[in-house]
Amino acid sequence: MSVKSSLTCLANTPFSYQVVVKSSALEQCAIDLSPTGSLKKSASSKLVIITDANVWKWHGHRLLSALEKAGAATPTPLVYILEPGEGSKSRATKEKVEDFMLSNRCLRDCFVLAFGGGVVGDLAGFVAATYMRGVPVIQLPTTLLAMVDSSVGGKTGLDTPAGKNLIGAFHQPRAVYADPTLLTTLPAREIANGMAEVVKCGLIADASLFELCELRADDILGKEIDSNILCDSATGRVLAFLDNSNKSDNGDKMLNSIVKTVKTRSLDLALVESLVHLACAVKVRVVSLDEREGGIRSTLNFGHTVGHGIEALMQPTLLHGECVAIGMVIEVEVSRALGHCETLLVARLKRVLSALKLPFRVPVDVSHGTGLQRCIDKMAIDKKNIASDSARVTRCVLLKSIGKVLEPPYTHAVQISLVMRLMSAAVSVRPSKTLALSSDIKTSSIVRAVTLHVPGSKSLSNRVLLLAALAKGTTVVRGLLHSDDTDVMLRCLSDIGAKAKYMEVDGKTLVEVTGTGGAFCLPPRNPAASGGLRHLYVQNAGTASRFLTAVLCLLPIPETNTSESEKTSLL
Ligand code: ADP
Ligand code: ZN
Image (cartoon, rainbow, N blue to C red):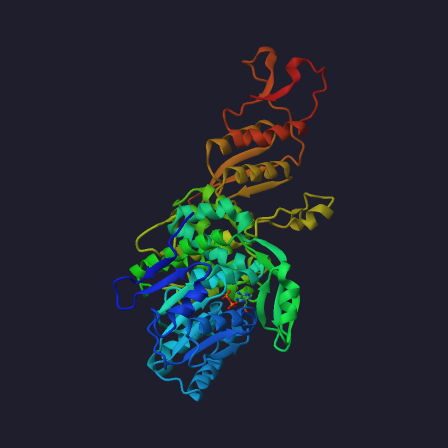
């Protein structure tokens, strides 16, 4: 797929800026920062590079060389290297960076260059937003997540003990440069992490992007390979990535440098470039329509209402994109449960996430015990929720089909009870200990009551009816899905000895099934059939007939001869 290498965000506004997506975007950034470059940085204004130790080790040399080559290295760039990780998105770090800039006499004309993942981008952006009431920031993201998400759109901020991103400002960058070659040093898990947001962009606004993710899922993460690098023996910083062919040449020539073999990734750069470009195009389009999240911008939060709740409990075990992946599945399930999209969509989403090595099931720590309630509590205080009654409803973006959300008003009130049901652990049916050990089943006082809430599904309803018919004693079934299929099941079970009747309790229709303890009887003979054949008449109830076929094996063998007339069959 061929795509243009640059997008314009907030076109026709005073804040308009370019998002450049191409393999030499880093070098382009250096050229644009030169005194004659498009960013209009004067020859005397200072450049402050904010980065983290990993990024600097891998790619710092390349950036400094590119700035040098473009004539953008005078005055000498100032470099502030953060500790990698979310911990650096703090007030304390912001203060340190500001003090560093103040002590180096950075004035209002300085430029901040955010060179790193989302942590660096958010912090550097916020520093730039408030330093001397605002200085320009250029985003040069180095993770896929930052390329497709945090670097575009002007959101900046930091975390506090009360929650993530609670302090911050909108501060649009002067330009964004996404260079996929920087991603070859990123672990596969970090690439998958960014892919969750790419899949999200496809889901909410670009069906062809979603299809590209589906089609090429196996190629996107690339392969781990051994690469030879030349690095500074004192600092460990990478000076060059070497071909195997010139390994010894370069190694011998440079003083104080050594050649090392390290693990990197071989990526299909054209593919990654297309994905980044298409995802950024969605983000650019949405942000340009709604800069401050009053309307359509909230569609970018798809998967994030639930995702943030999960993240609050699962960080640092799960990464942001991983939590969003699970959040998307639940929010698509919510959309399906409310009748807005088809079941197939849930299956397609799970499949693509699985191919991208992203999780799609709610983690046990969230679905079991007190986890779910804690997760819901975190969802309710998420600042992105503007629910009127946060105890009972939350707000979600709902999906109509791949590439289309339900609109407007883009976020919709969703009952917390529905979200909880979709997130809770699957119903498990276990033999009751008391029941299994008891020889006298009639001693009702020792038989514990079990409450089973049946979801509205034909197949589950039929399973529950069958279990009740197999059990000893009486089972009251609530919430059964009433359909021709369940009616057929009830009639057939009655025909082989289980007793079933409908009851009205508090205006609700319940079904009471008295089980056989597994001792079914033969169905009655059909007087109309030749020879009085015994059969269970299942009409065209496919689900019921599926389960009843197995039940035939449990029917008693007639004592008389096995003539044709004594056989039992489904009709
Ligand atoms: P994000 O929020 O974008 O996922 P972070 O800023 O937390 O990202 O970065 C994730 C991790 O990846 C950090 O440890 C960071 O140092 C590291 N990292 C960022 N970019 C690269 C890169 N291009 N190569 C190797 N590691 C990187
Ligand atoms: Zn996100």
